[in-house]
Length: 149
Image (cartoon, rainbow, N blue to C red):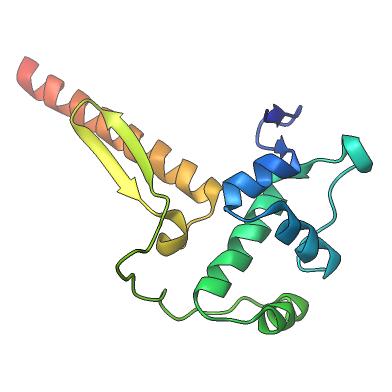
C-alpha cells in the first residue's frame, strides 16, 4: 500500500510497489542499488521505503536500456552528472507488451500514452494530465460564456 508522507509531493513505496510501478523484478531493483545506479532506500530493513526520486531513477534506467544502452554506459552517464540525448526507442514488433496509461479527462475525452516512449516521468505525466484537464475546463467555460451572450 502506497504511503503518503507529510510533504504532499513525495510519495513513499515499498520495494514491491516500486517493482510493480517500474515493471522490474525486485531482484533487479536491489541489483541496481547494489551497483550504485539507484540511491539506497530511506530507512533500514523492514522500515525501508522508496520515494518518487527512486521511481524516476529506475524509469530512467529502464528507458535508457530500452534505447539500447548497456548498464556500463548508463553508469558512465550517471557518474558524469550530465544528461544524454537518447536515440529513439526501438520500433515495436509483433508480440511486444507495453503498459499504457489511459487518462479520462471527461466522458468522451480520453488520452492514451506510454510514458517511457513519450519520455515522461511520472511527475511529468501528472502535470500533463492536470494541464489538459485545466485546458478542457477552460474551453468548456468559454463555450458556456459564448452561448450565454
